[in-house]
Figure 1 (cartoon, rainbow, N blue to C red):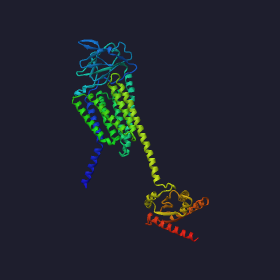
Figure 2: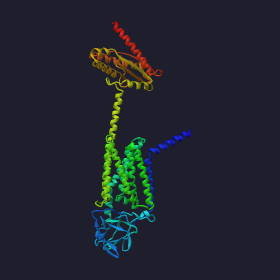
Figure 3: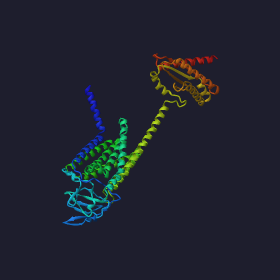
Figure 4: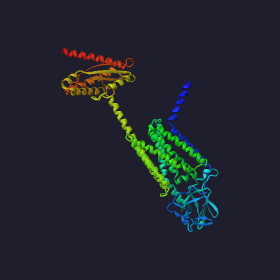
Length: 570
């Protein structure tokens, strides 16, 4: 017995792993990413200057002509190092710039540092230094992206010296003289759109997760994985903001988090595609496994100082674009099916966003912040399409439920009279024994339907049946179901509880029915005449409703024969 239980449990575990392999690979990747980031955070030293970022209206921009580079012990204009809106430097580069004679309210010089470790000196003293690892080789790649040198009125007219560490090779750009308070305010203001997107997509992800759990994982996971993809996208975009640097105070951690979040995008997209295209689920599951292996391989190369992390990011973009293109092709192939039209629009927006953002990121024609705006707009577009698709699916589900209820009702309704039909009678008869201790079953048969059909046509016979049905439904009420079980045969079930007198209840209903029949016959050309028989069950009697129906039928036919005999004698 225990062996069977263990084998059953093992089988369930194997099936769970098989069905959710791609999701588990993604979870493992996320956990490893967090471990690596914690490790990096404890391996880097921080700047001895606060993190303040971004441009503002009160800033004075310093161009390459304001900077000087040292060559052979002499200082020359740094225009020769100009690269876009910055200066290309390496480990042998030494720069200086003269602080203006009039600082006014400007008390900070901020600049961007991309890919190099730099130390700033004033009067021979170190005043600013980018973060580097004290013992890990991969830490030399990136220090803080934005740095600030605090100035005082006494520093006016002095020189600031910039020295790059050995092995550095990167860009210093966006030299700005400004007020610190304005820099901090601008850092928050410029990051608000990304922060808002992060909050919205986080809530979207949480709501979808609760909905999935509330359905006991039976609801489609497609929208949950789409919300996860958008949440990861918003996390990645937020780590590229000035506010993220301001909050973390360690550019190394922010950079690696940004790269890892970007690496998760193809994995989360594969999970979405796996749910959207079930027939191609194995392919996307395989892609998910392949992308996870690539992720761990890249981390291994970076930690062993074999390659830089930036080398792998274009390959991750290739993974993302490949998955998007395959998804779009599948949507086009199945465009006639429900739901794939909206998914196709979603993939088109995602592909356009990815290609445009990639071009803007690596192109010298645009400022680096442009790609973030492109991704921001694209992410909102994807979210809107996803919400529209979800609303359309909900509307369709409500319509389907309404139609299902309508068709179910029609399946148990007699089309001519509006009473319950034979299918409803067969469904209800076995159940009424459990609900009602006392019961009356009446079977009725129209006496003159055949004559009216033969002499006046079936339309007149239909009118007679509808009149009979109206009298039955009105007399016995909605709590006592009335069924049309044949061409001219009707059955009424009158359930009662143990305290009610079933005989008195039946007599009362029959009297009301007879009154309605008399009233109809006085005002209608088509006279109602029925033969009926009934059977009673008091509370506690063992007879079933089915047996009672047979007894009532026998009595009805007996009464019908006697009525015909009396009519013939007359």
